[in-house]
Image (cartoon, rainbow, N blue to C red; front, side, top):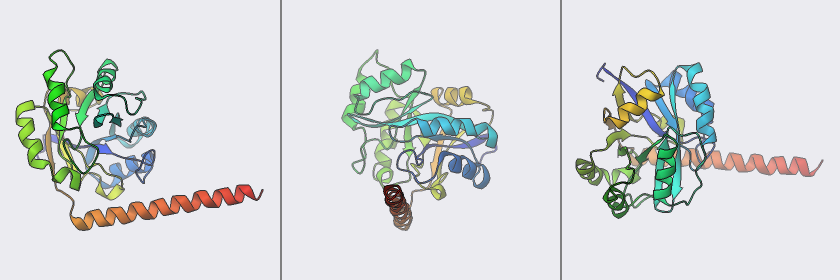
Length: 244
């Protein structure tokens, strides 16, 4: 890796939505087992885990960008640098407005993918046709999941036109996949404002590898085992409380 850059993973899910690890487990894992310097926990429609991670970032020497993956009427978008809840199933246009009014920026994750709830090409074109409307600043050039793989070339071609900041986010729901795709930021970055400005000024580069079929199977098994464990714990807790 070029020594003039640092690595970031700006698309991670925690136990505050459908991820397995807690925000603290994620930040600690990143600090101890990866070479990432910047992360964002972007849970589905829940900002709480991200804000908790922001508090932990300084303790572990990691820059944590506050963010959330919002389920809009037109698909998922990532809102970074915000600290407020945005209601799900709001229109994408209203969500973008709220984000920019709050000082945040918009990322298009896994755009156009038919394998997950993604913003369509038609919707993206409509956004960029609105001359006075705020536009997304970044796009996931690399999302290592199968959902990202199937649209990889389309996204590259689209961004030749849009010229948005390139990001690579793992969309990780388990610890071991964090950092398998990453965004390079200038090494001079020291704080959240620097991260934000680097994205706005298109100073990022996306890298990473797509997950194999074996990786997806392993991840699915890990998530299934976690779900079973959580259900068993809830049932056990209800039985114990019911017998009191």
